[in-house]
Length: 87
Image 1 (cartoon, rainbow, N blue to C red):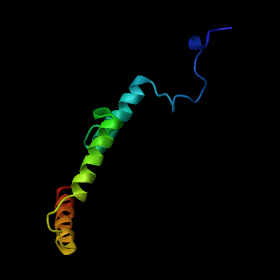
Image 2: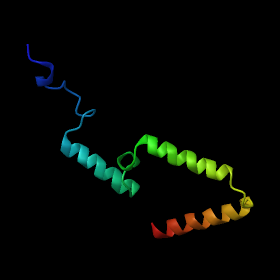
Image 3: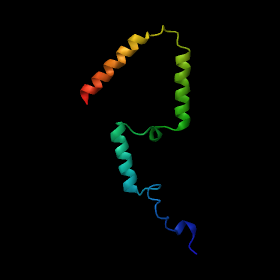
Image 4: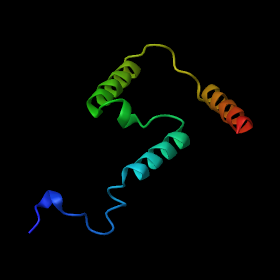
């Protein structure tokens, strides 16, 4: 009997464990689609959790006056319009 580490993977595992060229293709496709590196390559989940909690705390303790909903909607409508013009 062969040792476990010397056995070939069962058929159909290529989708679960892609070979290196396939994994690279998947990564490059994702980078091109998202126009950024995947977050999990840039930071750990603990770092992200700390960053996110700090942002939430800062937002909850922010004493600046609220921005009216109409102003926010106009701002993002303009951003969407600009993005559609660029694409």
